[in-house]
Amino acid sequence: MIDFHSHLDLYPNALSLLPRVARENVFTLVVSTSPKAWLATSKVFSGYANIKIALGLHPEIAVAKAAEKDLFISLVAQAEYVGEVGLDGSPRFKASLPVQRAILDAVLAECERVGGRVMSLHSRGAADQVLDALAAHPKAGTPVLHWFSGTNKQLSRAVEQGAWFSVGPSMIASEKGRQLVAEMPRSRLLLETDGPFATKPNGTPWLPWETTDVMAVLCEAWEMQREQMRDQLLCNLKVITGEGT
Ligand code: MN
Image (cartoon, rainbow, N blue to C red; front, side, top):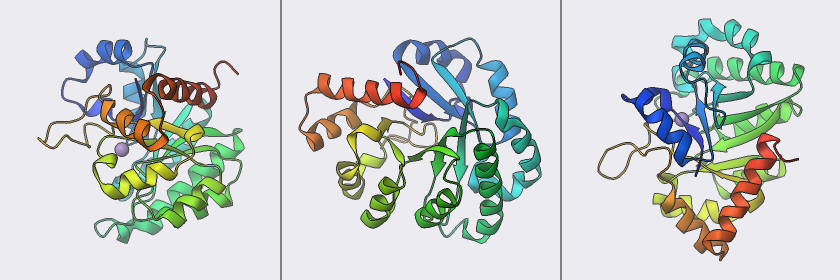
């Protein structure tokens, strides 16, 4: 239906998946992991009005791709969406937090300068730092926190700062994830899969249209019928994409 955070370019059969993604989903945001990848994917994935490619630099590879920072900044003005960007403070990546933060600050400053962008943000183990960076750049645009895994307190702070959220099947697999989702404002929620990084229990990647499980959890959390919830999500999509406004 909606996949607001997909790494479609990283599926082995990406090109053959493309027409099906365009058909099954109302909208798909393909986030990129580096500016060079964005340039390449934008060319290859063109021609589908409901598939957009976001300009990104994944925080997990911030050190390896730090040299692409200037390229990133030079491309923000022509990118409709930004992502995946953000910070990762988990044990494996926290050593590179200063490099990650320098990149994120530069990206947010440029987003501000060009009038704001919708941004898909990674915040694992670094929710407060991401929110600090956003607070320092209040006109950077609309942040969509993908696969949010912070505390309830950090969630409240994110909501206060105007953040949106994209929720996927791997997130709602845990009790903590489901509990966070129930606290998210329903007018600021979107679906995602984060495939092929996020995988099913059997190890195969979620496909961009496989968000039925999330729909079921949302229906229960919000005590809404499926149709009603679908309308809510489509309405949210219109607001964030600026269509029908
Ligand atoms: Mn991702």
